[in-house]
Each structure stands twice: as structure tokens, then as C-alpha cells.
Length: 365
Image (cartoon, rainbow, N blue to C red):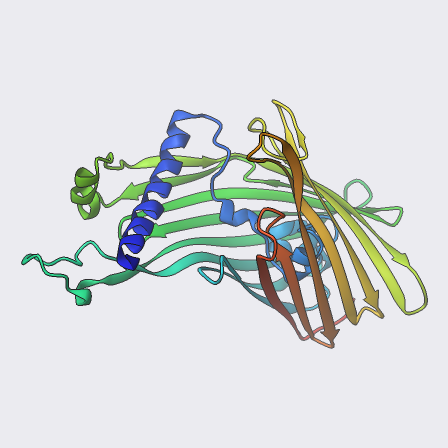
């Protein structure tokens, strides 16, 4: 039975990638593409409800808002993050390195991997003699990769503004069955106005195109037996989205402070299951708060992903994703942890997120 389930999982993963590309060819406004690039990075941002675009000021700006790189206060910075989903079935990893080009510009390289590894390939479980041979089972991975090169520079316009852009390269694989390459661009800005930090980032601003190629020789026999259509090479498009945000720091006492942050994630591909939705635009609001003790220890809370769920009796109710996190910063090392709940539909199903950040040759400006 377990090998039958494994076989179903293989076909499901492969059919899913095929369905994604086929839906894009039928519909000029696909809603979901390269969704692994919308998960996020940094346990700090996870704990704050996935907000970041206005206040991010370190190496993780390469993901959230490249303009934030301009606030990097060390010569070089390294960040690492790991989290797992669905009881450890899927793993999400991130690494990034940032450095200064000159006093007015920064650059960073980021790598993201989201994957399900060690998936059994049971196509050859039964040999030519009709016998079950477990030695014939092979394993493969279904993996998504994102490579980002980010550049930021201070611009002497509007009284001084931080601006930055990303070049994104996407690579997705489903074992030896199919693969895709894609390219895209992001552009972001940040500015501080009367103690408020304002940020905006246009993601996939020209559309990110994934070109899928399928090794049909690997699966045509299986698909013929199951009555499925053999996949064809196709192009999948990730449409643009705009994220705007604001945040502000408040001093509570001499040693304690707090920062509040709100982001609005806006898509333009029709109605989505978000808090605000129209035929033109859908808006997913996110909010977070961070308490700090002398900027050394941190406690964070956040909410995001408001969705309306239809129950079995036909009634509807609203659900959201709560998050919390802690962090500690000591000299050049920062360690953060976040606990996220995927929603009220699955109470108690949490994801643990760990990230570290290291400064090298730190020199305060």
C-alpha cells in the first residue's frame, strides 16, 4: 500500500507541474505561479506576520525589498534560514550574502530552495518477470530554486530615496521528468517621512516567464495506461504584484521599544480569497509588532493570510494565520526563531523557522 501511495504522489507532483503550465496557456491571467517565491525569508519577518518592505535593512532585503540594502550597516553580511512544512515532508532553505560596492550602493546574492526529497519512483517495482523487486525503486526530488542578484543605490531625488532592483532566475525540476527555467525582475523603493518608514516593491514587474520542458519518454507509457494526456512543452507566466508598507518605531522606556508594521500585498489578476477583493484588485493585509530590549532581545507577533472558508453546512467563516517569534542579537551575530500556524483549518499544525545573520568587518556609519 505504501508503494501505491508513493506512486500516486509521483503522478500527482508531475501532473501538478503540467496542470500549472497548461492553465497558463488557457487563461491569460493565471493566479498561482512560482508560489514558493512568495513564502518569504528571515524568521524576523515570519514572526511579524510576513511584513518587511518598509523596515527591512539587511541582507534579506534582497528578497523583501532590494532598496533596503542601502541601510546595511556592515561591510559584509551573511544570512541563513531553514524551515520545514507538512511534518518535515517539504524543506525550505535560504542563503544570502551582501557586500558594499561603495558608500552609496550595495549588492547581494540570494539562493532559495523549496523541495520534497527522496520521493520513491515505483514505475519499475514489478520487473519483466512479473515479480516485485524492491531494489528497482529509485528516488528523486521535486525542487524549486530561486537565484536573486540584487543591487541598491541611494538616489538624490525627492529629498533622498533608496532604490533597488532584483534580477531573478527560477529553476524548477520534477526528477528527470520535467524542468523549467524562468527569468524576472523586481524593483523597490524606501523612504523615511516624519519618523514613518515607507516602502514599496513591484515584484515580477514585467512578468516572470517559466519555460517548461518535459521528458515525455519517461512517462508516456504510464500516462497511456492511466488515460492521462502526455504533457507538452509550454510557458508559465507569473503576473506582477505590488506590495506597499509602512512602519514606525516607538520608545516605551529608556530600555524598551516597539515597532509596528503593516504591509498590503496587492494582486491584479481578479478575485482571490483575501480580505479585500474586487474584480480588478485583491489586497492581502499583513500586520506585525516587535518589542525590543535595548535592541538586544526581541519578541514579535503578527497576523496575515485572512481567508474566507466555506464550511460543510454551507456557512462561511474567516480564518487567519497567527505568528510569533523571538530573537537575540549579540555583537556580529543575530539569531531569530519564528512559530507560524498555517491557519484555523489545521489547528496545532505549526512550522518552525530558524535563521541566523552574521556581520563581517562591521563598521557603524
